[in-house]
Length: 395
Image 1 (cartoon, one colour):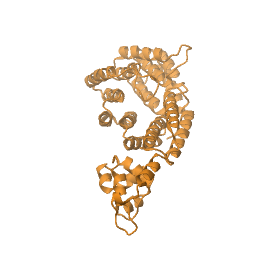
Image 2 (cartoon, helix red, strand yellow):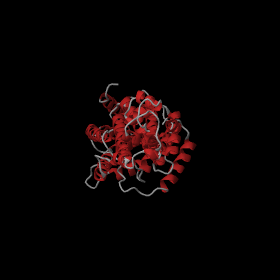
Image 3 (cartoon, rainbow, N blue to C red):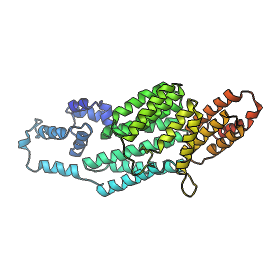
């Protein structure tokens, strides 16, 4: 067990957490002072990716009552069958897995528009239910599937926490999702956890850290569409550092990567990349490098794509950023009243990412001071910015 644990890159504490054990139990088991039951051995075998080697080792080393190990051929003929029955005993079932997968995807699809508090509550309740299933009997495949579902739910909760202005909660969820992704062997979940790190760094003015996270995420799931989102975050960071040539290079590469992936069946899922998002990414970058004409073109396209046939918005957070992009363009052209009107619409959206919107408001304020420093004509836009900041939660 010790050899397999080390080969899998786990410390005793890591394995204890993953197996819902104590570190003392892991230590005692490795020191031959404690033997887990068969179902625990099967779970440990899966966690260290032993492909049955740990189960086989248990069969070879089970005591015969005298303290000496017995050969597998000395065991009763039905011993293997007993262990296999333990491994396949389950309180879950394929239908439950399918239902949980569908509900989780639906929650991820609601991220763009649903009230953040309500979405978080439902995702948390779903995660707690998955946790209860994980603590009970399940097959090895079901256990892995449940961990994958838990990983997606935890990513979603972390994103919503960050939107609500709860960065420490969001980081805790991100770390948990990363661990679930690694333990279940799901590289895409790991990659999205790095994408979240890039997003956090971007909104916290840690621009040079973004490339480190985007590279790690791309290595975790090189064939997944998450690499397009990672490229977008890298381009945004370069734009905020003023590296215009690098922005163009990354946007071109991201557009190429986008073309390698088929259109998703549920493009509204927050954790998939659809072609409509590319206008959104490009809009942000062009605004930051001062190409306000191109930024405005993309912003109007984002607004068009965000609008449902009935006039409501399917992506209010994207639409808010598009309106702030148009506010910057109006300001640069000398239309302060127009800029204030666009800002008012952006800040009044019910579904918003407080943290991200605050960053954009700061950038708009910086442009306002640059363009109209000390000018009393700036008052309409200053009032809108002040009114928005008054609504922010205290930190």
